[in-house]
Image 1 (cartoon, rainbow, N blue to C red):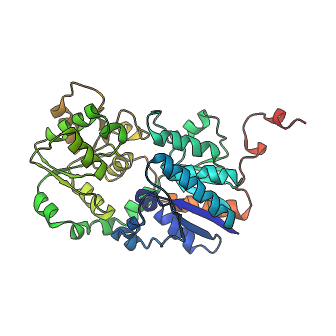
Image 2 (cartoon, one colour):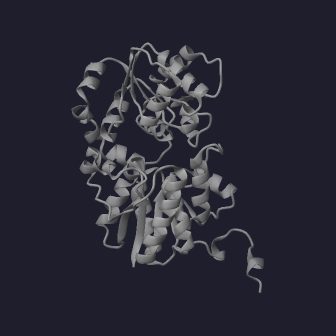
Image 3 (cartoon, rainbow, N blue to C red):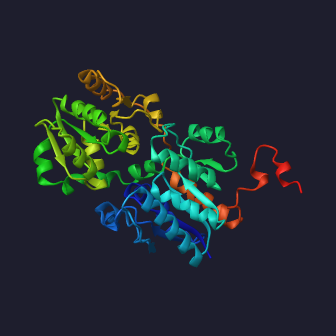
Length: 385
């Protein structure tokens, strides 16, 4: 029996977990399998940044049906369940809030302890599938690694035991710090069209992918209008779903906007560090921008990362509202460029904290945290005969 089965399924989660994977691989105290759910094509694993991080090829890859959310989730649950019939682990670990974490249902059906990295983040926006997923896995988990004390408090407010939640800081800080020299070489990996477009001039970096934004015509129009209202050059690595929706709705972007296909993480962080500010509906991107001291406009009705507002690294743009003063939004973002803030996401030791705790739980057979001893309230009546 191996100690850990680590199931991941999208590129950002592998990047965030890359140092954890490295530390687990180097440890003689814990043995693990790296399992790829198949939510994103395995070609993602050929990203140059993964190669330079020495992220290993997964030990196992699931064969799932990604036609829609229902087929993706149901086949991940089925593949996870079948895998656990043939491979034994002390615990199974997930990261994030994607379709992949719903494999935790199959783990629970096998009564195997569940570990969740990035637990207890909440947007309190029930339109978001991610909100449903993270609540589900958190309430199934035996160990939750929360990045911030405020996230732990949110879990406690839902009745999750304080003994289950451990605050660790955010492992993306580890990655951005440890590989900062590597990110500086990102220029070498950029397409020539991008290099010519930037040409040592000021530019903004944009991403937009959230369903509640791109599938809503009014919201997407407000996003397009915000982008078009900038006089600066705008670089927009645009996901294919967003490209389809902009075409379907008949929207046009200004001549100062260069749309390119999605790019690698190494190139993206290089561009983020060079941008005047970024405009994004990605919680991950505004988090990274905050860590790198790059201002951001967060295009969200709600967010699970309100701390970027609290420290002053980001301003809110709600695409669901009308009558926006677009120039004012850009002016506020511009003004943040001259301000330095301290990010709240940790000191760069999060991966070590997580792996050390996993080793301790494994050595002492403490993965089964869902016992009556680990609850803060009296549940003795539940055990009366």
